[in-house]
Length: 147
Image (cartoon, rainbow, N blue to C red; front, side, top):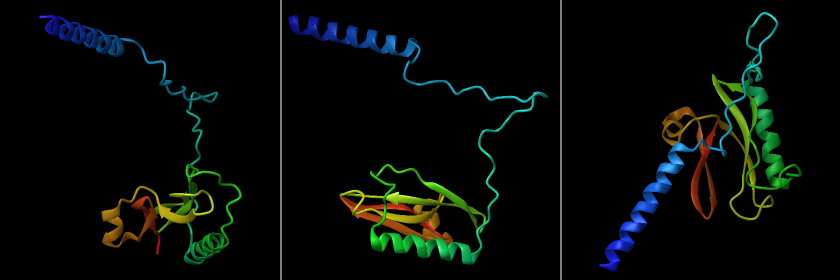
């Protein structure tokens, strides 16, 4: 008898907590800031459109610099595996970014690499580029490098 009363009390408390969480405005998520408008009420876009198109020579030059930094382990601006990607431009119609990955001791065992933005492993293996894998605590797909 006492067990049923205890279980019933726990269920009532849990339902009350769920109801409270669903009806209370979230203090953890901030609403997006309103867009600024100009004098003529046109929206001012905070992020400019990327129009840089990388040539084969430019991409190869960037790839060589990245490879040299990986060999020398020169990552003075990086201190963790959470370094932000750097958008470089577009190559063959797809956005390319420089990314940093580290799966263990960072930044010494990390690496820089170039990757198309938003290309999954299957698309990459279908000829879009060359898959990049990280090996640390297991193997994981990191991105799709332009070829």
